[in-house]
Length: 57
Figure 1: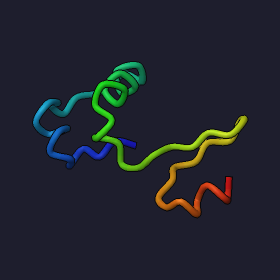
Figure 2: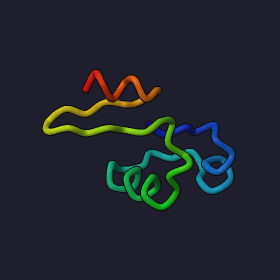
Figure 3: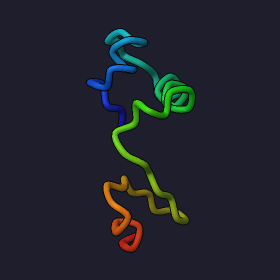
Figure 4: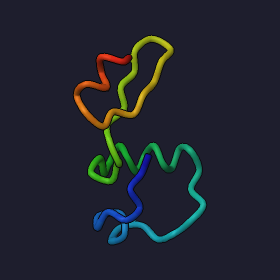
């Protein structure tokens, strides 16, 4: 979910074993480090790489 090669990630965070809550906080405060958006519909979740992926959900 997180692009650890993104310059913002490398600049702000060292390699570490983060908890799930830590990862969520990092993404919340630094959305640019996400690899791609996530779509949620009901109990289904999907990483979206193109607008057409939404149709699959």
